[in-house]
Image (tube, rainbow, N blue to C red; front, side, top):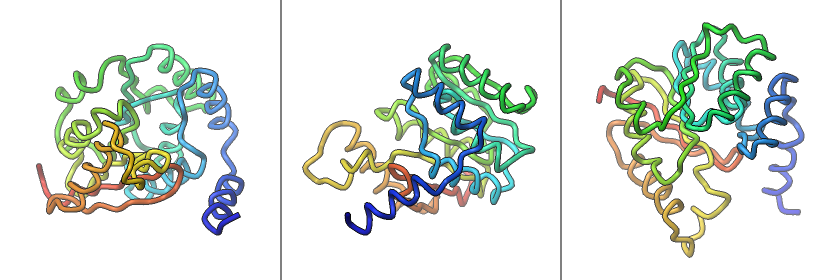
Length: 211
């Protein structure tokens, strides 16, 4: 086993997931909703806490795993979560109720993110988390950077696409979109960009000026 493999295994086994989030994860797996890993969830919780988040937008609700992790770190935040699958949203509502999250702290919107995001107020959110429809990830990031306040953070999980982004032979549409996003954000003077290898990767973008 390589050092990288050993580290990855240790991370998978070391994170203790709260019971309510573990239940939401089980529901997500049943639905085929591909929840974020516990290691990535824990990092989301830390980011929500360190940014003192009060208002969060989530694109791609799944069964509520990522949303619950972020609210764990930001207990005063209000989460707006968007998904076009009513079954996913119903599971998330159940998961939030089981976790005893007050209904005033979570707003679930059924619809396509491309239709919902243009109607949201710009420079009004602390975190925008993008975990849906990888083919349109660049468009969603553009919306995210418009929606976050200066100093707010846009988060894109799975950015390494299971190792495909690092493999120059892989040139499918989604892999190419992720590569382009990484390159463009590294070169942009409007954001600070960092990559983490936790989970399948996390792109972190901090807005440093108004858009």
